[in-house]
Length: 177
Image 1: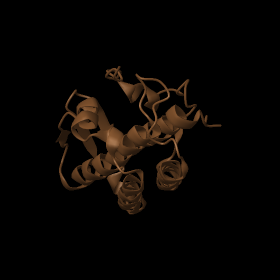
Image 2: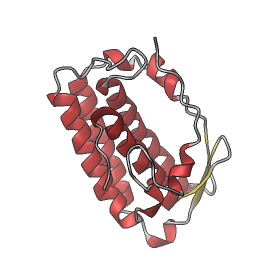
Image 3: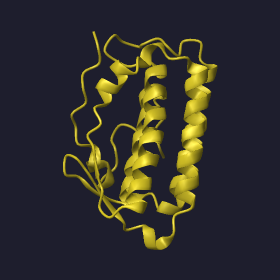
């Protein structure tokens, strides 16, 4: 049995604490996003490189840590590209990203965990550098997801952080304080 597509609108995590992972993304100041994104990436690299069972699904309809790790690598890459668009274009609209289709087309389940870890580390470094380089006058630049969800640079980065932290919870059960 394959995991079911997630059709939730997760933008609510900008307005309240996630009952699963414990993060209230909307309360994380932009000044802390880069450090938190860097720390999360380090945890993902550890999971991908140190776990003998990284490719095993805990249940047939739940992604393995490897599949989550590949997804998180893609999240860092995609959010870095979209953040760049927000910084160079006025009000860009982001194309829809079907995460489940990406998992199937990208064969997430059979990726090499060491390669994914290296790619994730590289993608995270790029994203973190971009976030650390943000000027205050860029914080309110806007972008829109294809489903109509609007973001500022700040809310976009907060939304990103919830994604990578929440998937750590999916794999480890680790809850934010």
